[in-house]
Image 1 (cartoon, rainbow, N blue to C red):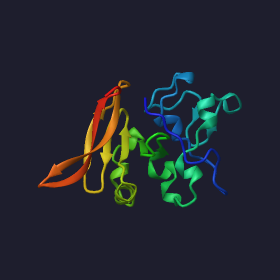
Image 2: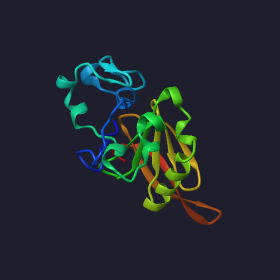
Image 3: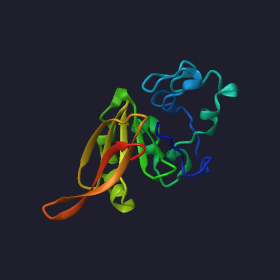
Length: 176
C-alpha cells in the first residue's frame, strides 16, 4: 500500500472541496468497503457525503494538495483535472490518482508538462495511478511500472544511457 498525505493537515485560506468528491472514487477505503475506481456507496457524486458527520477517520484526515497548496490554480482542483494530487510522506514523491473514467487526463496540458517540471526540479518522479496501474513521470519520459504489490516499493535509480546517467524508477521487493 502506498500511503499519501498532503503537505499540510488543513486547507489553505479560501479553499474548500465544494462540489469536488473525486477522492471518494479514486482511493480504496476499507472502512466503508469502497474499492478504488468506484464511487463510495456513501458519496453523492459532485455534492456531498451521506455519512459526513460519521465518516471514517481516513476521510476526516485527508486533504489533497489542491486543498492545502494555494499555488495550485483552479485547473488543478481534482474535479477539473480528473485526478487527485498527494505527496508520499516518506519519499516526498508526488502521486496523481486518476479517475479511471478519464484515464488519460494526466497526459493533457497543462498537467503533463508541469509534472515533468516538478520531477526535474525535485529530482524525484511523479507517480501516476490509473486504478492499480502505475506510471512514473520523469523529466524526459514516462516509465510504465504496472501494478505495485503490497510487498513492493519504488526506488529511484540511475541507469547509464549512452555513457550518461539518467534517472529511472524500478519496483523492488520491500525488504531489498
